[in-house]
Image 1 (spheres, helix red, strand yellow):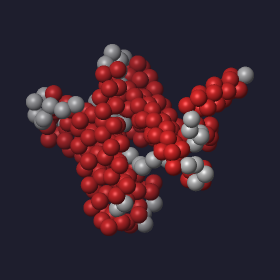
Image 2 (cartoon, rainbow, N blue to C red):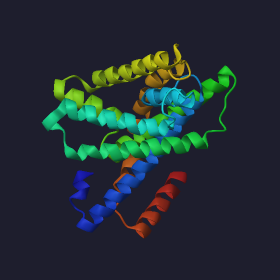
Image 3 (cartoon, rainbow, N blue to C red):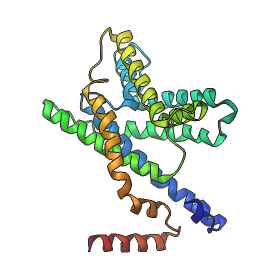
Image 4 (tube, rainbow, N blue to C red):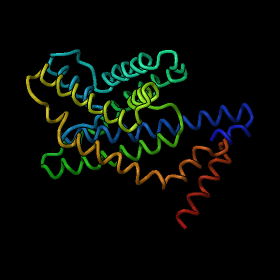
Length: 253
């Protein structure tokens, strides 16, 4: 995309930047919809929402500030960015502070999707499993799109990247380490506030999400070249609409 941007005028670059981040917002909406479904499954939320979820439950019970899951997500993302600064110090690039904006939007959209999925109340184990699996797949689609958008990383990925840069550790190992740490903190918070393991927060669905989301992303990644073309499409409203209609027409026919 950098090569393409070099051929664009200043005005076109700005429009291209705006279009890129409109698609990023769409990706975040899809991601948070998947996270909301995992929360609604009652089998365990996705890793990134375990801490906000347990804090929200504690807040509803009067044992912590009564904030929404999205609001606790803002706070957690702020902490994750602060930890990146602490790890990288002078190597931290100021542009990565944009993660705070992305993290805020992620939390806001998570609250929106929690509201949109409020009618999803699975009662049987099979229905809960179906909601969990559906949430994992939707989350993976959103992550795949977000990666293709090529903006700054989410705070949850930014910390493993920072650890990897600072220590030379493989990103995959750093990511697993951070994910395990978030889950452990959520479990500990469950014991602090309720004296027991909160299975609806960290449950079998959490383990499924850790494995399945990454697997689905790997399957989707080679098949999303078309989305990169959409992201890199030359700006211009009428030209875009015409090109998108032609693209869809050729795909259907």
